[in-house]
Length: 271
Ligand SMILES: [Zn+2]
Ligand SMILES: [Zn+2]
Image 1 (spheres, rainbow, N blue to C red):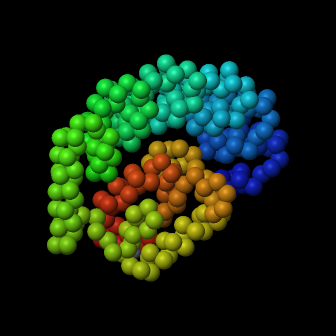
Image 2 (cartoon, rainbow, N blue to C red):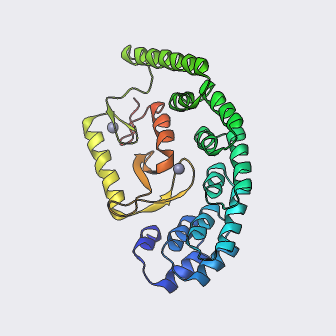
Image 3 (cartoon, helix red, strand yellow):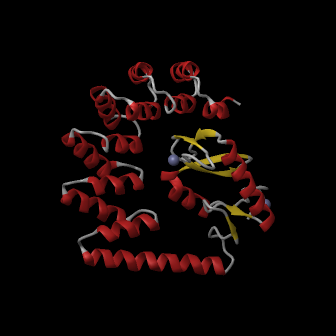
């Protein structure tokens, strides 16, 4: 109930109360996005502990000193994709490059590694990260990383390997072996058992978008808001009897997940 209500609220006093006091971080995040009062935003920036709320509030602060302090804290701590997004906002380029170098080398999230490498001014480090990713990651990441390599011999080897593994999985699917094959797939790559379930799934997603529901991305926990019109920050998919939100940066991850998911997303029949 409350999760839908935040989107429709305009009363700044009510929004301020939610931003400061609500127990759910995605409700505080939604409220912060609609608040204009800098005193309230400053209060949240100084007291909230959730990285997504802090990232949203820093973007709205007119006090750039405080905003940069929040970004520096987020870039140094918290989860990798937040560190990356905060580093991109830093005016302190020395710190930003330090964060990129760390993430390009160490992040467990291959998409973050790839993006961080792209921000590095140190090309030796960047090429090392690309080479690592090109050798070992999901196929789409491997191809993207190979495309950035200056070492053309390695790049050509990677292209050949990925091509080989892709054609063997096509062959498995044609032979009817499990390989994530389903004739009916939705916009996030989610499988359905039949045209009927596919259509029902589409209708389900549209109704979530129309209601403008808020929630949390099922892959990265980032708060998101569904929307048919304005600022949509996610897609919605029926999943395990609930709604799975997928933020824009996790669309690729969702596709990879659904390639190995063998149930109809609508009726949960095994595929
Ligand atoms: Zn996400
Ligand atoms: Zn079904």
